[in-house]
Length: 179
Image 1 (cartoon, rainbow, N blue to C red):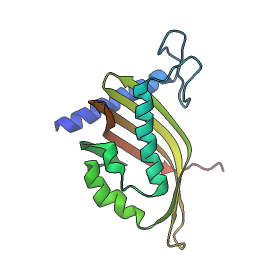
Image 2: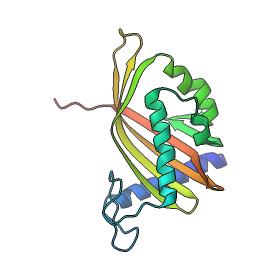
Image 3: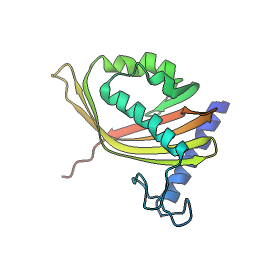
Image 4: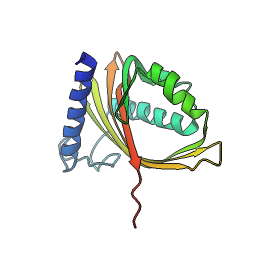
């Protein structure tokens, strides 16, 4: 097992532990709570680091919506690792060139709905979890649109004064419709 795989497994375990802790309100500062899906609960002051992490994650999501990922390389460290739907995609540069970039040539639209994000900072490491649905339409109108429920877990690292994605993992499944 490579160091990166071990790190990803550890990061995922930490994210899952953080997510489990987030199911019940817990203290971040005296008198404050943070619950899943809330930007900030009353009394929770957003730190400068948390604001920067949220800015990076939101910039990536917004680039996907615009279907313009030309500036997204600056959001990921050069040695980043991308995992998607059970696959190892490599660094973000590789993922962008061989997967994400080519996919956008077929798309007419990409929309996120019901997006929720939680952020936990531990020193120079940020653990982010996102839940959302997404809706994709194609330039070829004969193709059926795709709608999925998705999740993403990320580890962002601060190097110097800059936060960037170090590990990004996303997966999705078809929406379950009420019958």
